[in-house]
Image (cartoon, rainbow, N blue to C red; front, top):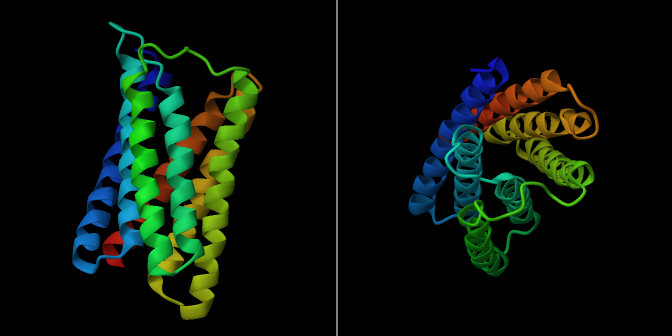
Amino acid sequence: MDSNLIIANVLSLTLFVISLFISLRGFYLYVQSRSRRLFILGLSMAVIALTAIAGFLGDNVTAISLNVDWFNYIGQTVSFLFILLSLMRNSNDYLRRLTTWHVIISLLILLLLFLSPVLPAEFPDPALTKTLLSGSRGIICFIIFFYYVSAFFSKETRFSLLMAGAFLLLSSGYLVILPKYAYANMDLLDHVGDVTRIVGSIILLSAVLLG
């Protein structure tokens, strides 16, 4: 087996397990506190966990063609966007409506996973499209980082500090891989980005567990 595929498999499975744990923990805390922000976090990480396992299956299943890039890129972008939107306002009515839209849009995004065998193998103008989608993930995570930095300076809680560190690493992991979409032979950047995101996910899990 190709060494790059082995590394990709390990990273995909690791991200799947970490994201799944964060999702389950988020939903558990939501049941206790009824905090819609925790529900949004749980649902977002559940979709991200599915993108990780979908990427693993897409790399390893050869019996059928699974074009999971559509689900992976769009699913992750939308999931991080809803986490960001959940931080923008505190009103119960806003968070209730946001939660409803999050559920609806997440269900629609799942259609991309079910339709992966018949979707086109590539995005239109893949270098530009993937750069924009991956770059948007990085920018969204970077804005979330600033929200938690602001929260930390306001209340100086361990949770805010860990969340800030987690989203800074997630942002860096997405942004560092951008050159690979325009240039060939950028496997090292790809691995660095994946490892950075794994570390960020571990810190995010720590924040949810300790918070």
